[in-house]
Image (cartoon, rainbow, N blue to C red; front, side, top):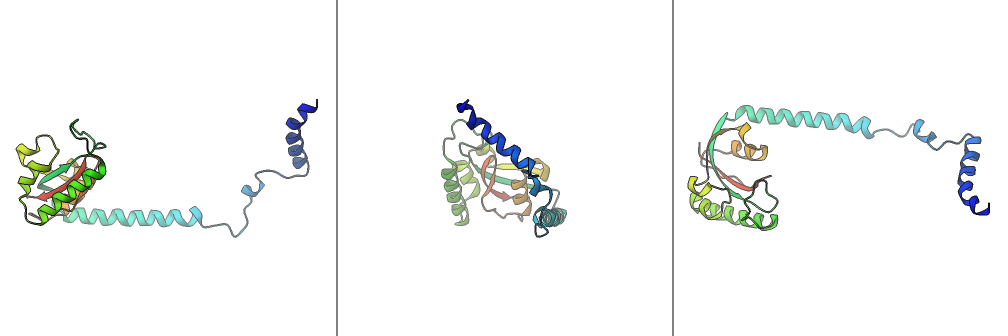
Length: 172
């Protein structure tokens, strides 16, 4: 009987509180007047910001061509989607490698030569990184956004996608 008291005591305490009219969730049902903001204020602001961003994106896309041509250098890492088994570098190592590629391009190195030396994309060396002509929907969003914002002959900064790190050169 004595060993049962510790288990019964919490139940007695709760029943005593209920008898006094105290409930555990009473404060959630009736909040003080000073509580506010939160979702009431933040949700409409966030929605307005998202709509404004989407409208800016639509305007940018409307000014761009429907199709372009480009070449790219793809540096993959162990977490890259569709990577060949031969790719064993970490993400940090891949980032360092693609930064090296971009520095060489900015210093005047030939893009096609660097494709052959650095790109991990299967078949890329034979095509010299050429992707042909494509529309925006054929590429993942970060790649398409970067490629379509370039002028003909211009080279992008490093672009990260699920496939790895890209340096893009617009050709058409």
